[in-house]
Length: 275
Image 1 (cartoon, rainbow, N blue to C red):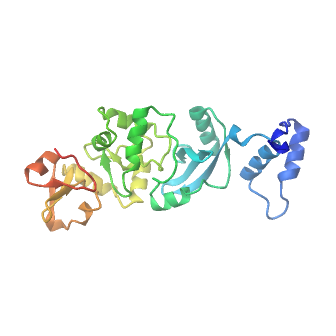
Image 2: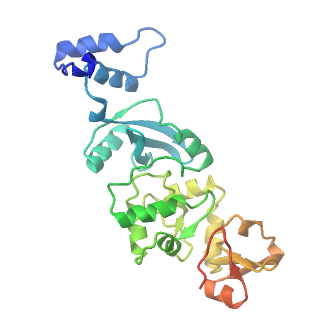
Image 3: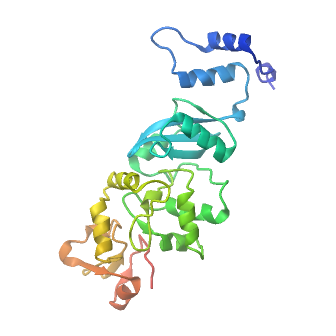
């Protein structure tokens, strides 16, 4: 172990003054206050595993706080839910029992995930949740950008017998946007915006090309599946394949059973229920 790691943590006004002098950079290139705080903590010898870090990034519905511990992302909260850094830090402490310190350096890969809507390669820590909820949110992570899946589909993918677990998992989702619960719908087709208000959900979906009018129009027509009169394949209506069916060849179905009875087979991509 190095002498630096062996150095005791200094406390008090004198040590804080020395730390500030050591890490502050005068002039026009002064480091942001967030990174200054981290510099102080490291200078006085506080172990880095004693606290977590978080950054604030731009997202499709405003700011997003993203926290991490070591290499795993532990929390992501929309600014629409926690408007200030102080509120996010209090939320994080209550949820994890740990302190999160702000930094200007985002976790690797997060900016790209927010830009592309694809976060499946990120390492997320869901270990604080019950196993069933972890399974549900893992299934939610598999929903492609710009598509929706009903609660029953997620329950089936996660091998859960109780679909209510899915709604609970969506409501308590600790990683907003990175686990895209804005892509979850009730079996009626209406969005399941349990983690935040419907306006925020609408903004997230609109950024992916899913307009509110489209989804509510499907619900009003009781179109839960959409078939192609050319291929005799039926899909979830927001499946990439379904959205390529031209209007003259669209065949709406209110249930998977009615599609099957009409001689249609399920899409191998979005995997709708077979019965």
